[in-house]
Image 1: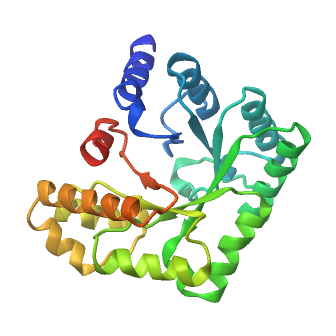
Image 2: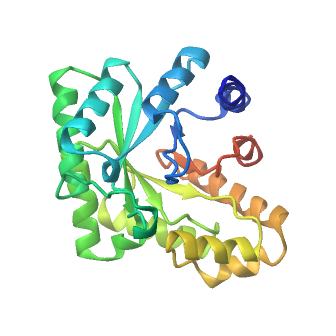
Image 3: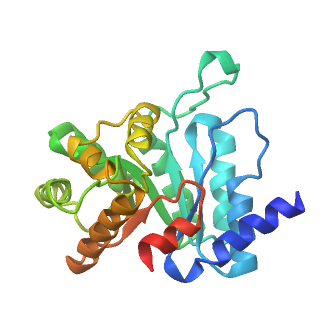
Length: 256
């Protein structure tokens, strides 16, 4: 246990100068016991002084437990938290999908209400389907989450190239008026096989141009991901959401 904790802390220590907020993911694996993401985030805050945001999953909690978890994050003075809906557990694992709220927006609104009551300055993040912004319904859903109390929305699926896909996502954000409230995602793919695997696992539909880039291997993929980040910086987006896939050193390859 102690050894795993040290690896976790040291992994973030090595890259703490590269990010403003570090998401602490809630791994969807019922066979693994794990520390609460709120506790893990507080550990990073105490040990390293970083803003670590626990991912809090509505799927796994009834209303009272969810609100208690959020309140604990405020009480510990965490700088940020992320509230997500969570994919269903498969029936074969015999784990209940709880979700004691009608929508993710309702859960965000309840967390925001507590934030006001305790006069906390903690930022609240929530997810957004970037492709959903092509439709009136998708834009309305994103704005509803912001009205409910989310400060920023983190986009999925990722922006996969610095040309056509970046321009497409930029255009959708501009048309919807959400450019200053959405952080585009840069995701470290490894090769064409990995792209195909991620499409299946996450349910994404990724552009065919990504497969062409991936054909030249991981080095070319990383070069393209760095170009995306350079455009985000140059065009003054509010930030970038970098997925490390559990390997913190990936952030150094992309951001340094």
